[in-house]
Image 1 (cartoon, helix red, strand yellow):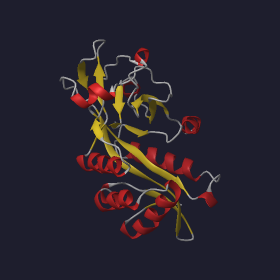
Image 2 (tube, rainbow, N blue to C red):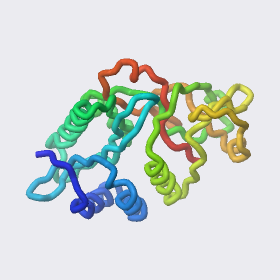
Image 3 (cartoon, rainbow, N blue to C red):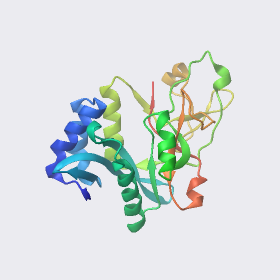
Length: 239
């Protein structure tokens, strides 16, 4: 049976998160202190023990509002029982019943795309854009995104802090360059010159959305065909 987690479940959820993803307690502590109370958290319990769960974060794509699946996890001893599929179906039904337009996620690795497609998701937008080595200029492609997926400020701040815990520097939510290496705009639609640190790093948005070392698509589940056609950028760019 699927239920919603509450404050009494925080300790169980944090321990499961740390054991599965080997996450630093600084990161999980930040999440449960600042984010958890505003999330929708469906869980599956067996004999009072949480064995599978995910967090649903508020997000927007343009004028559309939805939920983002975050930290989907199942304990090793309970995998292969279809629990995550049930949670994803439950989450999508929750979205439709509460007037949300879509359910969104970013697969943790390439092998999961087929799994999420079987759960009704399709590839969408661009995520995880990384710095590109300046010695590979032929990889520099131009892309203009219609919009960027938006999260509450508290979520953005949490992710920024998580990045710095692991030694990354949050630079921006991506830049679009023209052929002369001048910024056309960043993903928020602001036009500006390239900051000095980006002249060195060569951070760019890729134009191809197939899975690769430098970029990958996110995934979305929605009945709204207009949303599926939006060119959207997702993620935090690191140096």
